[in-house]
Image (cartoon, rainbow, N blue to C red):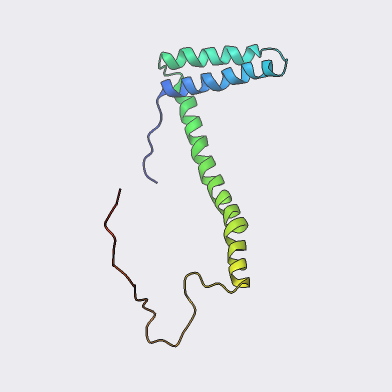
Length: 127
């Protein structure tokens, strides 16, 4: 695994300030009351984040490791779901309709080389 740089305590504090502020204010949208506990936590994170406090270092490392763990666990699951819900049915449909998109079927020619017709490349209007 390559070395991944840990984010700064300042950015960590500000991000969690925003998260807890949203948790504090969200009930107001549904005619609820302000969550004071979340507002207090958000203010603490803001102060510690702006001061770039060393108090946030263990929380920052813990959050970082949690993100690495989620990436290692969820990425293969999500890729497997995408494969079995998208790629596999597409392959079955192509086989059902006998489509050879990659031209992999056997033929009696001496070579599988495909001669290109027309110019080898068009270098006009590249950008």
